[in-house]
Image 1 (tube, rainbow, N blue to C red):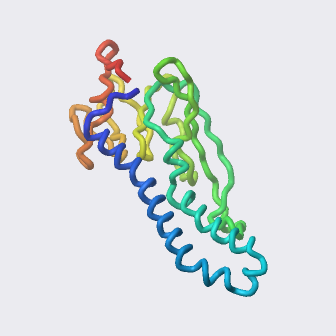
Image 2 (tube, rainbow, N blue to C red; image 1 turned 30 degrees about the vertical axis):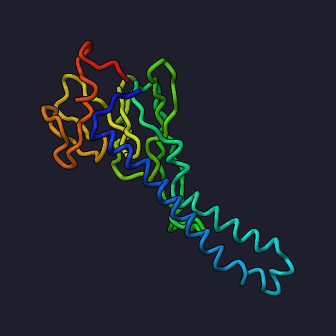
Image 3 (cartoon, rainbow, N blue to C red; image 1 turned 90 degrees about the horizontal axis):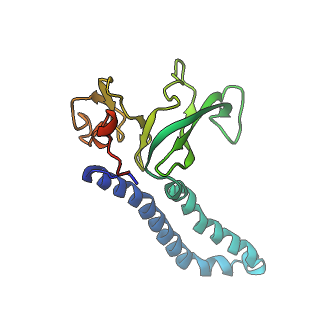
Length: 207
């Protein structure tokens, strides 16, 4: 397990709380809607005759928060650190309009997977990017043997800089900062190279 500094632990906790808060708030709203409308709903002639339609309607109302809150992805995500064993890039075609796709709404989509060897020797597959294939997008950012770090709730998976590197990428906002700095100059969070010291024996092993 990664031994995070206090500021990154606080960020991680806040990111875990957000989808849970949204989910609970949506479910409370759905419950209030159910209480306020159920009598009127089930007294209508059609619903009174076919109660299953009313049941299905309220089931949908209570299920929607599972998707709009992002709680599924929140439960499946985690902070991880390890060595890249394999990089897999999948290029597909997607559409900006899923209801009525057309030639004009299609675009190329890249999905990047990393197979990361974590503490204990287990290799786990992580999807670190999925989105529009941008012109000039550099797809060789990650290579076998790179040490990578992902902080829960962040959209970035950063490469831990080598001793010869001069810049370090923030795991929270993705901005690169001089490696001589301890904190990101944009968001103020601890930079990854301060958690995982570069230089062989100096590297922390408490992850």
